Amino acid sequence: MSLIRSSLVLIAATGAAAFPYNVRNSTDSSLNAFIETETAIAKQGVLDNIGADGKLVQGAAAGVVVASPSKENPDYFYTWTRDAGLTLAAVIEQFNAGDTSLEPLIQSYVDSQAKLQTVDNPSGGLSDGSGLAEPKFNVDLSAFTDAWGRPQRDGPALRASALIAYGNALIKSKQESLALDNIWPLVQNDLAYVGQYWNQTTFDLWEEVQGSSFFTTAVQFKSLVEGNAFAEALGQSCDACSVAPQILCHLQDFWDGSSVVSNIPTSGRTGLDANSLIASLNTFDPAATCDDVTFQPCSSRALSNHKVFVDSFRDIYSINQGRGAGKAAAVGRYAEDSYQGGNPWYLTTLAAAELLYDALYQWDQQGTLTVDAVSLSFFTDIIGSNVTTGSFSKTSAQYTSLTSAVKTYADGFVSIVQEYTPSDGSLAEQFTRDAGEPASATLLTWSFASFLTAVSRRNGEVPASWGASKAGTLPSQCSGETVTGSYVTPTPGSW
Ligand SMILES: *[C@@H]1O[C@H](CO)[C@@H](O)[C@H](O)[C@H]1NC(C)=O
Ligand SMILES: *[C@@H]1O[C@H](CO)[C@@H](O)[C@H](O)[C@H]1NC(C)=O
Ligand SMILES: *[C@@H]1O[C@H](CO)[C@@H](O)[C@H](O)[C@H]1NC(C)=O
Image (cartoon, rainbow, N blue to C red):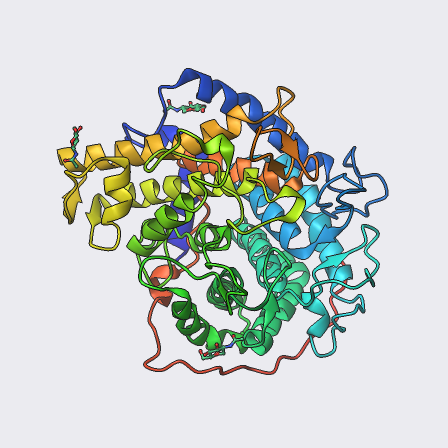
C-alpha cells in the first residue's frame, strides 16, 4: 500500500512528462493555450471563495469554502459540505503535487470542520451523528435553519475522503501524530455516520429528489474502504467500515444493462444524470483494473453510461446543433432539468472529459484496452463501425486508434467549455442552452475545482490509490446491515 502510494505521488509530482504516452496531449494549440491560462484563473477562483482571506467572500470564517460569491438569484453565499469536500480534494491534490503554500489553508479547512461537526442543526446533532449530514451552513459556521432538502448523506463521506487524503500526506511525511490528533477524530465521526445511516433515503447531490442516490452510495462505499486503511495506518479501528461490501452490493442496483439509473425511485425522470459520471470520478482508482463493480472510469459500464448520458443532451440544447453522435457536446445535470433554465453546466461538461482522461490513464497503466459488448457502442460512435470486440495491447494499431479517438473526444468537451467561457476566464454554474452565455451563480467554486481536476487528469496527474482493487468483492446476498456509531467531540487542532 505505501509503496503504491509513494510511486503515484512521484508520478503526480513530475506530471505529464512521466508518461511515454503519445496521445495524451492535444496538438490543438488553442486548446492548450486556453488550458494554461484557465488553470491559473481556476486556482485563484477557488482561493478567492475560501475564508477568511478569499477576496470575494468577506465574512466567511477561516477554512470555509463558499459555494459562490453570488448572494441573490441564486443565493449561494453558504458553505455546503459536499462542495467543500470536493473542492478540498482538488486543493489537497495540488498540495500533494508540490504546492506546499496550500497547507495552511488545508489546515484551516480541517479546523473549520472540527467546529462544524459540533453545530446543532435542523438535521440533528453530533451525539447520534445525525447532524453530520446537514447539507449547508452559514459562512460564519452557524446553522442554516430555513427549509431545505435534508439530510444529504454524501457530505460526511466526501469530507472523510478529503480529510483522509491530507491525513495520508501527513503520515507519509512522518507527521503521524498530527493525523491522529487533528484528522482522525473528524474522520472517525464521518465514517461512523456512513456505517450507521447509509441504508436510509437521502436527498441527492442536486438537492432535489429523495431516495437512493448512485453518487451518494458510491462515495459512501469509497470512504469506508479508504477509511479502514487510514484507521489501520494510525493503529485505530473502524467498526463502521465492515458494512462497505453491503454498500457496494446496493450500488449494483443502479445498473440497468446499458446505463446507470442515478436515482431510485426515478421521480419521473429517465435516471440518466451527471450524478453517475461524477460518481465514477470519485471511485476512480489509478491502480484499479477496469472493474465494472466499482464503475471505474475505464469499465465498460462507465463508458456505455457515458455514451447514453451524453446522447440525452444532443437534441435538447440548440448549442449542440451539429454535435451529433460521437462528437463532444455540452451536457447538463439531466435532460429534464429546469432549474435556472436547465442549461448545460461547466462542471458536468468537464466531468464528461475527466472520466475519459481517467480511463486513458488506466488503459495506459494496464497496457491493454478491452472492448466488449457493453462498451462497443461507445467506441463505434467515436471511431466507426470497424471497431470490434476484443482486448488490444498497447503495442497494437487498434489500441492507438482507440485511445487517440478517446483523447480527441475528451478534449472536445474541454473545447466546448473553452468556447463558452468568457474572455476573463470566469466560470459560472451554467451556460445557456440557446446562446452559450454564462448563467445562474457566478464564479462557482465547484466549476473551478472541476476544471482543475479534469486538467490534472489530462496531464496524467492522479490521486493516490484508495484500494479499489482489493474491495471489489460482492457479498453473495445484499443486506441493509448497519453499525450504530459512537461520536466524539473533535476540537480544532494545534498544528
Ligand atoms: C501538455 O499540455 C500542457 C498544457 O496543456 C503542457 O503544460 C504540458 O507540458 C504538455 N505536455 C507534453 C508532454 O507535451
Ligand atoms: C438498503 O439495502 C437494501 C439491500 O441492499 C436495498 O435493497 C435497499 O434499497 C437499501 N435502501 C436504501 C435507502 O439504501
Ligand atoms: C477504423 O477505420 C478508420 C478509418 O476509417 C481507421 O483510422 C481506424 O484505425 C480503424 N480503427 C480500428 C479500431 O480498426
